[in-house]
Image (cartoon, rainbow, N blue to C red):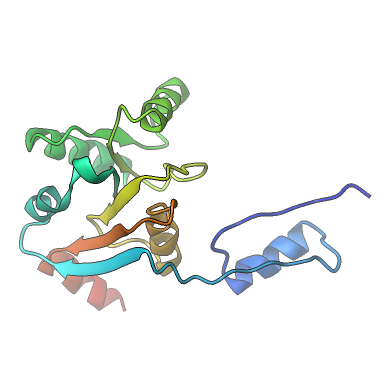
Length: 178
């Protein structure tokens, strides 16, 4: 007899069915919105140099940026690459000690960190209104991941760039997997 609510922003029909079944919901009220986010400007670019293209694209004066990568090592590597190009950035991933993750989240929330390089671990509860760019420098693991991560941009209704940068080699590997 205890009321239950389950929330998600981007569940596929299969995930929605699983949620209903696993939570034992009986005749649940399901409110679904559209995936359409007209304020997100989606762009996929094949570029010869992803590092340079990322650095050229990032505009910290417009708001915050999240640069998504697929691995912990990638987060650390990309944060260092951006710093070398004079773009202050921090790395966030699940392998960091809890205290450090909390400090990074607080610094992000307070605007001290404007560019976060992250794995999917940086996502739940990240609801900053002024994220103006979400950049993927590696091919995301799934369309659902891409949509969820890009959806962290423009939460205030303002325009946000959703950019995927791929080099020819990564694109060729991706096509072979298809």
